[in-house]
Amino acid sequence: MNELLLVVTIAGERVALPAAAVESVVELDTLIPVPRAAPHVAGLSALRSRVLTVIDCKRSLELGVTERPYTIQEAAVVELDGHHYALIVDLVEDVVESRSAPMPVRAAMGAGWERVSVGMVETETGPLLLVDVAALVGGSERQAA
Image 1 (cartoon, rainbow, N blue to C red):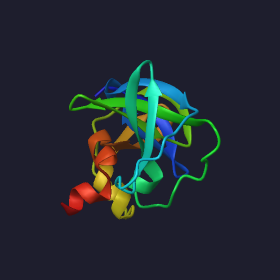
Image 2 (tube, helix red, strand yellow):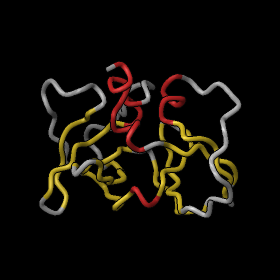
Image 3 (cartoon, one colour):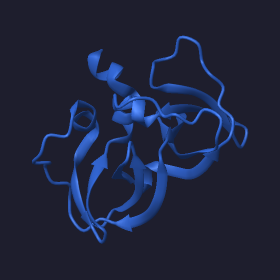
């Protein structure tokens, strides 16, 4: 409880990422496609002399493709197993404090959201779905493997 959360919007839905998992929030202006990459991998970008694998969160959730190939995109940078990833989100809103431990979600959310859900947490701005960053980076292919 009392964990800091980064509130972001993905596919039009306000959700929370554990702030401890997020290194920084950036604006990506360059995206290099990667042939034969998993469908949810939008490409590669660079940040302070390191390569970021860019994850299209909307595609990871099987909710379509983020349609902004020629504009600056907001992203949350995370590190998993020594690799850096930029998670493309619609909007980065704020950092808030959780007021509860994650509780089970008692509604149908869709397969993508159910795969990445840790549970619902109460915040000062209302309940938010807490998202598992590793599951989001892994995409639907990880579950199928």
